[in-house]
Amino acid sequence: MASDDKELERLISEFIKTQGMCVIATCHDNVPRASAVEFFPDGTTMYILTEGGIKVENIAANRNVSVAIHTQFTGWDSIKGVQLTGIAEIGKIGSKIFKDGVEAYRKRRRLNEVIIPEYMNVIRITPKRIEYLDTTLKAKGLGVKHELKY
Image (cartoon, rainbow, N blue to C red; front, side):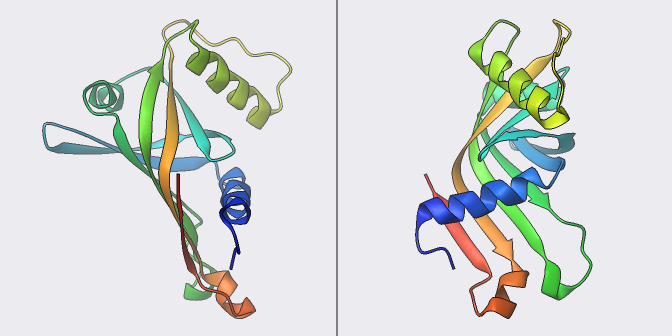
């Protein structure tokens, strides 16, 4: 498929832009937690706006996360999805992470201006590895599973 990592990263970024929800998996003290959340991409970096909760507590204790993004299943010949493994960071109001996350939110929502309450947090997920699955590539004679490492 992609002859180089830049092309693969472009395909993954384009796919991520088409989706609005993901599942983020966190873990602390061997207790996993998976949360369905809206996300806001900037390339392959992802931002999540959240009030807090267990996922934020888990990230404070263990920054390693996994994220799944996929299309709705309509048949074996049209499966598309991403499994992202990365490092999460929490940004509070005033931080660069917070500002970058609000900007990603603003762009995705096509807003001119955004005001986010002070109690909100922004989670930034920087990928270390992305696995991309796209069964529609098989019809083009290409492989369906691809991996991008950072």
